[in-house]
Length: 239
Image (cartoon, rainbow, N blue to C red; front, side, top):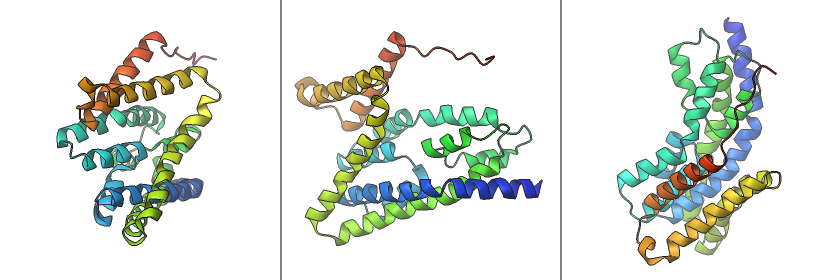
């Protein structure tokens, strides 16, 4: 059994090396953005150590800069990162039945989109040590990239850090636009979210709402609306 666990750990470690490199690049720009909004390298690194979520952390940094309440930050993070609950449930169903509670809790430390993706591709039943190996490589890349970005943000000239911080928005474009090319309905959803976000910024009655509350309202409203008009059909598992 220990040999099997070791093999799964090493396989997860190897499979997540590309993820680690990508995490480092993305979190570096996140660290620069955090530094530009007044966070120290320790605060930025701790944030990445506890979260591992680019969208959630980017929103959190903006909310901190806008001096939003702790409650708004907590609620927005719960809404933005709700998908990880579904991913965790899917992984739990794929795990070996004798997987210990301690191993399951350890796996829950990082259930990111990328680690979930490579885990979902593994044959069932899934050995939890595969995930442990994956996060052993990916997590340090995310945390160290954030710290280095925050440190460099305090060293480089403001115009350079401003230019590098734009890479964070490029990351979101790189994540969102490729799927849109193959899914017209997804393009409608993204366009609607952009339009609603713009409306919240220009309509006087809505512009005074804090950034965090805006994120919560827009996310819940659009998710509910499109879930009603375009529900996802259940897949036939007997095929």
